[in-house]
Image (cartoon, rainbow, N blue to C red; front, side):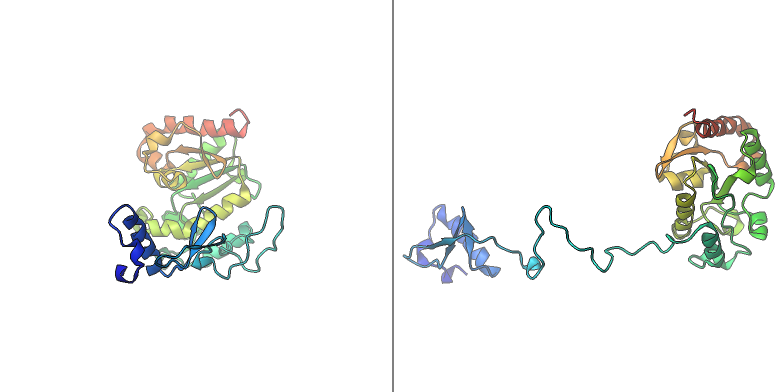
Length: 273
């Protein structure tokens, strides 16, 4: 490439670096160079470069783009959205429920008897979130109605929050086979439903019951023990972590720490925290 370059720049001192630089610019198709506010062009052997008013170089990927507006200028809103609109944003709680019952976004729909959207009043101040439906929930289409559900009812009454005043749901809306933990793809497909429910309710506090609920909502792999006895936040809403009622049936010694946790939730509801 240098053999086509002006002989006056074929030198061995520091100017050779400049020659290489010019060569590289020519190789990528540039025919003008900007230095200190002027444009140097028509470089040839023994000739003085022509000085012309500087022009701001425009990258090729910006060619043909509309000019950047100056400060204070209002531009029209584009006709098209940069991001896809949330398909659930116009649905109320009943609409979410109907959509969940027809949902086929993941493989859990293949083995379910009934999807379990969740239930509770639209003005609920406490929202309880578990892992997923069990066998009884799969039969009835209602959350927390088995033995664990009866224990949850007792817990809620103890903090003056009867079930009728609480919205109860799960991370996934269909029962995983043999009550296994939900898989990541199943959670991913189901979580938008729950997030829309949370946005509609905007409860005063969320009670996340069990490891799956806690780790999903807080996006952490921390142990349940390390997440308890604290007030977290989810989308700006206070969140308290505790054991799942089904775990309490297997390990009754966890009832005391669960009682401590739900009393934290109760204090938030009372405005004491």
